[in-house]
Amino acid sequence: MLFEMMTGTRPFQGDTPTSVLSSILKDTPPAVAELNPEAPRELSKLIKRCLAKAYYLMTRDGTEDLWHSRIDEDGSPQGAPERLTAGVGMRSVDVSVDGSKIAYSEGRRIGNLWRVPLLRDRPATWADAEALTSDQLELDKSAPSPDGKRLVVQTDRSGNWDLWLLELESRALRNLTNHPAYESFASWSPDGSAIVFGSDRSGNWDLWSMSAAGGSVTQLTDHPAYDSQAEWSPDGKSIVFVSGRSGTNNIWVTSATGTNQRPLTDDGFDHAFPQWSPYES
Image 1 (cartoon, rainbow, N blue to C red):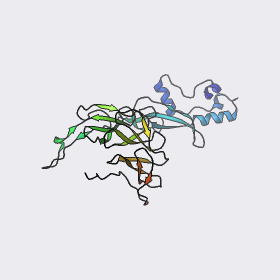
Image 2: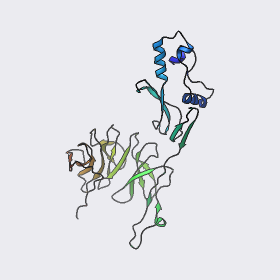
Image 3: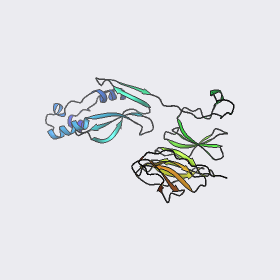
Image 4: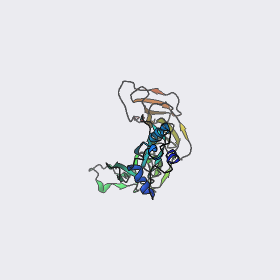
């Protein structure tokens, strides 16, 4: 806007959105002083700094697209990022040496859930495998319910990495969480009524819990360090998890309501994926 006010013309020209995008990528606007010799020198320098730019891929609006930011002389960003493509779903991008063209790949990873039996007389093969989902989406980190009838799965089918509930008999998928944050590592309570999971929805990786039927969520931990990989105890009273509070990832335990948080290990080594041994009946 400053460039146009001082020169009477736009810094990047084009008859179509595509040609304007090409101009943004490859063209360097003329100096303000060339078009308007009476423009104040300091203002001309400011406009030049504002037109410096960096290009990158970002998924701010759900799909991965090309964005750019104005860059100051010291390398710091100026103003809000600007989106150059919409809904393309780029995976990688390169700009040609002369800046006239971009090359990019698009698409997404596809990952579905399968069930394979454990056979006593022989190893299972793909012929024994049964597909539980067949969507054009990515599924990851499933957790079976205590009764074996449901799975909590992590999937990006809604655009966010949310938790979904898969009914094994009907194959129906139901959304449990719907949040722009990343949510993962779900674990069921022993009675199947609740779920604990890790999420960075608070700005930190913390533990959260919710009813298995869906609804509101409750924050169990609140610490700048990483808290996740939770596992509910067989008696339902405690939750073990991984935390980076001491500088390395150690095993911690908390009550099911988030009180009495305390470390179980603190030996300077990283630990991951804690599991409870089943209680004897």
